[in-house]
Image 1 (cartoon, rainbow, N blue to C red):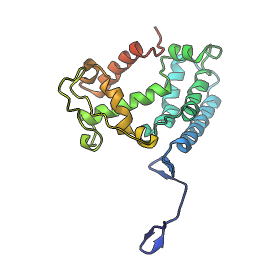
Image 2: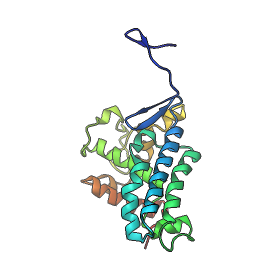
Image 3: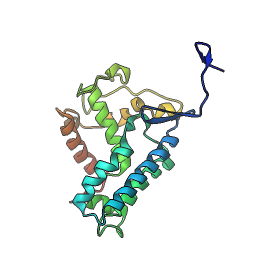
Image 4: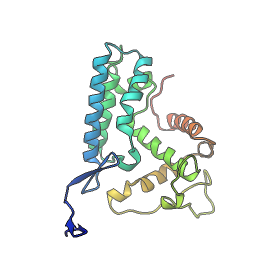
Length: 220
């Protein structure tokens, strides 16, 4: 079917970049993931050329400033769900952590713990939960809760009073949409995490809770 504006046919494309995110015809994020990984690797290459060696403190500052933004910009709009897309992004951080002096021969999990980092897969989930908190608790967010979520109506809820209604989805593109995928993880959070009075306090509580309950490697 052809579409027109003022009698002019619209160009048909397989993918289109909108507000920095590549949207494909299938609505899957694979194209955007590959482009993001390539861009992040380019940034990592430039960083490697600029520094002859990294200690842990220098790496933390440079990586979080130059590479993380490439991997996480607007992540709620395109967070991947299949292993191939997840791995192509995680590969960037795997390679980056090897640049730190004394870390190259260690396992990825050990490097993450030594450098006080989380896996990107967790940071993506963390980003979903932070955005959900901003929306539901009116923390510097102009998005209306009703446009994304519905509060659960069950009266015998355990956990916290801001639990969300769980709804079904048939297609993966809908199942893994932000307002669907965030619900179960948000509902599973304990009360002392959700009742945070600020985004920064939520981040702190969330990281402490996740480290203890999901066996995420952290430094001692």
